[in-house]
Image 1 (cartoon, helix red, strand yellow):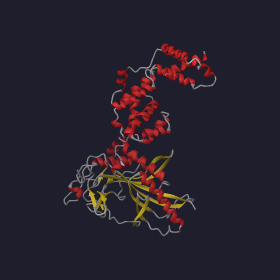
Image 2: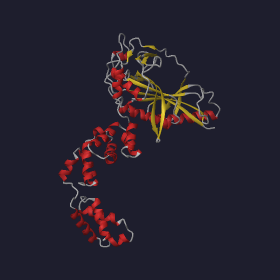
Image 3: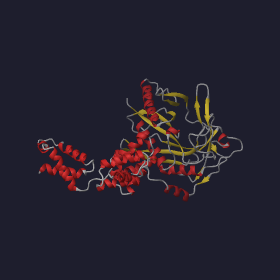
Length: 483
């Protein structure tokens, strides 16, 4: 029998764009000394009261709108009660479905292997993050810098059927968070974590039955590669249980992903309804969401990656591969679009950006903001090539020098006197000189050795130190061959 996977995701993403935490004035920062960014509220000292960070609410509302979610009239916060050492208060300030969270019942369309797919969103809610805990052989260390950082939890319906779909969704959401300025969404900084829910069912069934399988939750997977490997392993594990007749005996459970062994490991059994004793946070009154403020937020949502990609393909004629590379990071896409505002042609700008500048960035592990050559500098250089003032080879050499030495391309051209030969008569004379040096070239060409043309072009370039226009050079060589 064949089986198919039923997969749902719970994606946690820190809102890194606020200056302070979600309920306290402590700094929202990364990579500071442990326990440096804390206020009495973060440590649950008596007499402290939470104050809602308006900017965090704004970013959460923007994320909800991007997912076409229903937004409630009033915003409530609740207490989720449980004990763990990284939760100093003994409860987490969060949102539950009753009353409604900041967004519910939305959807997201994303691309996977060239196909568009849509996943249903159950809800997205704003909450505070817990402290970070590091466990060693004899001691555990707690860093409360993370405690209280605004956190978005996005819960999907079980609409994914493969690891590839799940990862493509996560990558799209990360792009959306980055494009909207909600978060850096950097897993290396611990800003993204994911819980994966997996079960399997008979592949021949079209509709998912009510009791289709035993749900297994894998907690706190810290990378998209980890999500992919987790799903592949867990599907294989559950199918083996089916084949051995032990699947029905498996309890609903929580597991963790172990990167060293490449396996999921049992943590605890999990019943359907854990009693977190939710109740309305008494120290935060309900907040009415003003309709004019909501519209202002909606207008600030930028054009997102998938929409930009479709525009690049349909309007600019770029390939799927090139468009994907351009929209992978918002800063690169912005750089590309700024080039176009200075008159660069879409295809040329794409070629120069992806082949030279991205290559330079990847080699030296740089962000585009650290690149000295601005979009205007690149556009000006491309226009010289299009006018025939310099050759593409010369332009590439100039651009590489500009990148390495932090110098303006046009100044390099001026200082070195790099200009393409504009006197066609001079080029024609050099072509005739090359033919005199290679008197058998015409006979070889007529004998079928067509690559002799490229050789002759190379000789002209050598004599002119690359200043001859390649197209004009080729034209004169072919005319000489036919004469």
